[in-house]
Image (cartoon, rainbow, N blue to C red):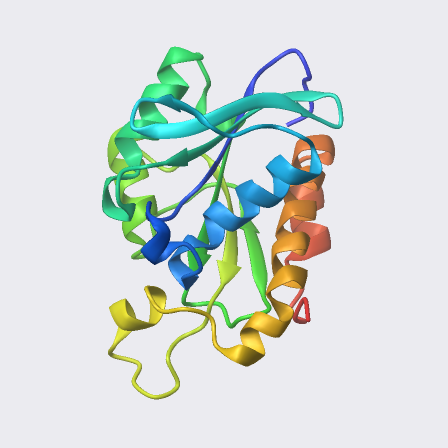
Length: 198
């Protein structure tokens, strides 16, 4: 992702509505909001069952988007935006939570399957494959009951996690900027460390 003449679509995944605003499943939304704040890109225009905004990050023209369908229907809104702006999968970056990474860890992936994530599954269905980069933000699993995945991802960060959440979201924002400016491989070299962000 280095050609400033092209649009890049950066989409964060989450669920719409105040009830879900601070939940673990909305980590992708939080990173898009952090990018919007840092680079003064208003994300409020409604399009294709999503909210979006256009602007520049370090000289690169981008579209920030948050699908307003629920998580398991994230694909069609993002596909519609990509089609409208003629954005290819190689010029997309998807940001989402990941229960297979502990809280405080992050992983960048250039392409691949959905890994059981319903939002990414919807995207791979809509695009006919997973040829898009993604930033995976660790939210861990419930220590009390690993089988209660839905309750965990739709729950709010606990107090200890909340104390470090700003650091995690800022690191994910910085990872997005690195990918845009220097490419996914540089992002992976910098951020796919086994050590935690916090």
